[in-house]
Image (cartoon, rainbow, N blue to C red; front, side):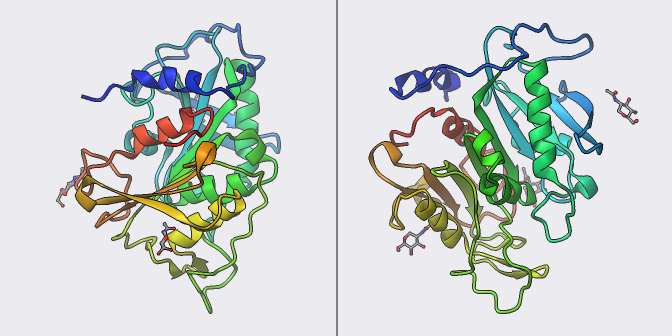
Length: 315
Ligand SMILES: *[C@@H]1O[C@H](CO)[C@@H](O)[C@H](O)[C@H]1NC(C)=O
Ligand SMILES: *[C@@H]1O[C@H](CO)[C@@H](O)[C@H](O)[C@H]1NC(C)=O
Ligand SMILES: *[C@@H]1O[C@H](CO)[C@@H](O)[C@H](O)[C@H]1NC(C)=O
């Protein structure tokens, strides 16, 4: 039996833990009509960005919420063609078993896609920063514990766009990409998946977690040309993150689940695992879930555990 209650105590083991930085929303009672609870109890929010664009998102507030304790916040982005409510069901981040105390936002993409997709034209970084700003005024958030995760295009938006944006990366503590689409360049001609340049202008070091299946037929593990862009192979994508994080390019691998999963970590000592990748043998384009067909591994509790580590003293 798994016991996720340890997530509350993990952070306190870290000597570098700083005092929570609380937002203006601390002290505010929940507005009338706002509900708490698991999947299906989240709040549909109509939102207007500072640029005046109408957007929507689903907001999960845990039943444990009280306005006097600053909470972490996770942005969970759907895959291309999906919606925020589908992402809530897929990522299970509204389930108290996996995430007992953080708020979760499941935004809806314009045309069901995110910035970073070859076709997307929206400013989803701006949308994200506006949501964060607005939510901090209404809810009691800890600005040191804001995270992003997502599936496919949503994973690419988290780990390749938000984490590489100078402004957004300073607001986020960590990201996790699941079967992420990390499109590079402006053409698929001459695509070299092992060496395609990955421009990134975010703050470093920046904690990044990645999950990918070796049988992914949509965003292949080996990368390659796709939709007029070049996809890096996954080892190149994660090793580039490790190098940017000053962890070097040498990974440490650990075989899990009788070889069905290999975990690659970079760094050592207090930085060990600051860049981590789970390679899942035979898994297709999906969110790893022990209840699914492809893997023994559940991405969601690993993501929450990664996010909850206030310092990285080895995983
Ligand atoms: C959001 O906007 C839609 C479309 O205008 C409307 O049907 C819905 O009631 C609004 N929801 C909230 C919570 O205001
Ligand atoms: C880990 O290192 C080995 C040896 O250099 C390399 O073949 C492999 O692609 C690396 N894996 C990742 C995920 O970086
Ligand atoms: C597992 O595979 C079966 C047959 O392909 C499919 O019907 C089912 O939806 C899958 N279940 C999950 C959880 O992916």
